[in-house]
Image (cartoon, rainbow over all chains, first blue to last red; front, top):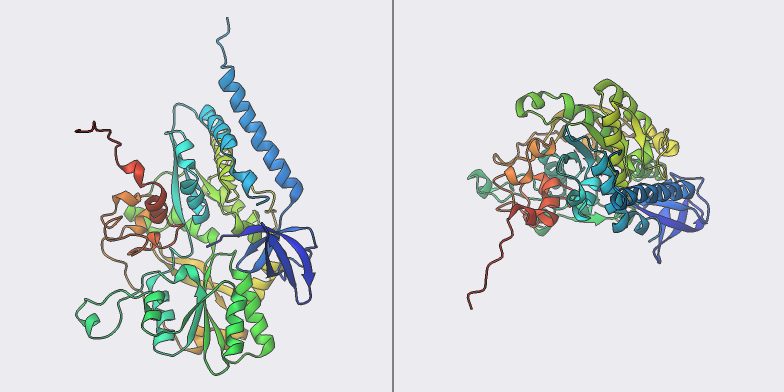
Length: 85
Length: 395
């Protein structure tokens, strides 16, 4: 029910409306709840309304953190800790 | 799609799973509840459950607005369409939720088939599926001679758009539009799971921490969970709805439990802030106020857990406009949704599961939405219930 997807704003129009691009599909949504959204932003779209703006820097940080966690795990598997001699 | 696909990478998922397994303390078990149906769906659909170590169990919570919508509310919407001749507009999710049996000679014998909005439509009710609340408003403009009711359900994610259409309808002076408001609130429901009277009756499972809502939190922010984490000494990690988000949140919960911390942490930093979306909160506050009590399917009456339309918008409130009374309707006797929503029972503990209750013919609410615990298990987890047998061919 709370399904929402990040979509790129390609045009902001009158009446708090915007055209967004979602993987090539274009759709008109309301940006009344995110009046600060500008072209190029990724907004999170739910039932025809943008409810938030995606922070691209934070998204990159989260992805980097995933890679870091997974890399630590890989290293642990490849090189299991040994008992001290 | 950008910002979706990267958060579903299988290799990374296995890496994070190995990290979770490595950090579990061997002397204890871990039980976490994911409150949201969106997380339940991600855990089931992407096989997250299979990547987790056996000592860690995810309990599926009641965070699916379709699942917790009580029969009495669906009956109200069906009544508006069948008996009052209104056009009832609603999101597709609510169309198949089972309601009371149809009125009439069959019903008096107790043999009536349960209705749903979909079945009411087949009986001639004018039910329209809408994608957005704004579509319901457009239907009202197009049919000035008819009463048009928007049957509004959903958590805090879905409430702000409803607030906007109510304000818009008031501005336009639309005389034939109203809203049957069934919007519910997340934090009060999470609290209710831990302290309701039914918990004493049904028992409860120990929950070591919660995965907090993704899109609800975009709107309300992370602050509303702080009181809860402190008061009930339970860690909360707000997580996005993609599988890697959920796995990282589980790792964060494991670390909090191991360190004896009970804090609100935010994994979904790309969309959630501490304060949330202030424009959305303001719209909701202008139009809605707290209801003293509201029935949740499976949880019973939960105090201050829902919203109603403020008196200044009374003309747009379908409950006032049509003088609707709420009637409590009990669930099917053998339906275990109440216990399943609390994590006390699993879908397979219910006699109706996968026999008479299936996603095509749901009896209980957990089977209706793909986000419900029963529907998720039916679609993605049943193979685990049967031992795999390899038999030599007779030929």
